Image (cartoon, rainbow, N blue to C red; front, side, top):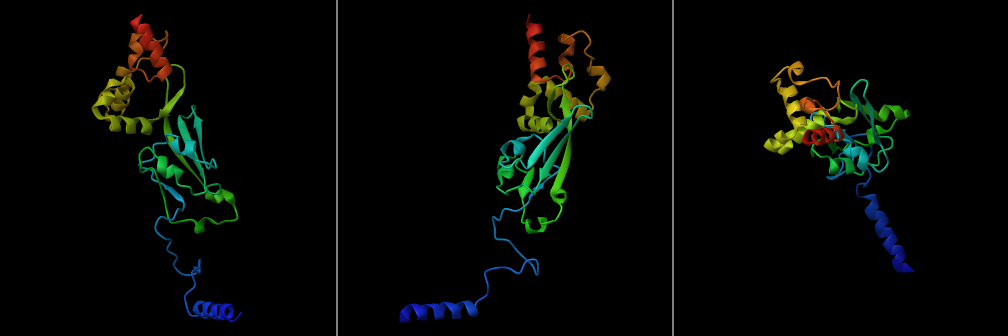
Length: 203
């Protein structure tokens, strides 16, 4: 019985004269350890609004809402539901669109709406059926990723022309009035409508 008592006294003395492992947050400076998973921070210049992060988010903290009437996609990030797993950063197609930061404790609040953030991205909509293809930023990223191979797609050519303004929109875009025909090749079409156009051109 004597040895356990001595061991407990030793542990008490060591604990008494050593610094605590816990921090005094929010008093003083707090520096998380390397690799700490905090609030995911979005980089507006590198986020293309491709929906990948929403598809891999376990608690569904990231949601997308598309409005064809305004041609905008709204991305909502609810950090009150976020579990800071890092899947959004891991699966980001650009590798720079979202990064986990050191911030987490400062997210505490009384109103959960205060930790909800939104972004908006311009949509690319099919001119024939009105289907949503993707965002313009997403297609531009794909074009830059593919390089010269991207010119094999008419959709990429149209997006490049719009960005560089090589020709006026009225000179290359023909309104679809009599169904999909060869002259509609340079319209913005979704994959289904583009397939239908190519089949009709071959027949």
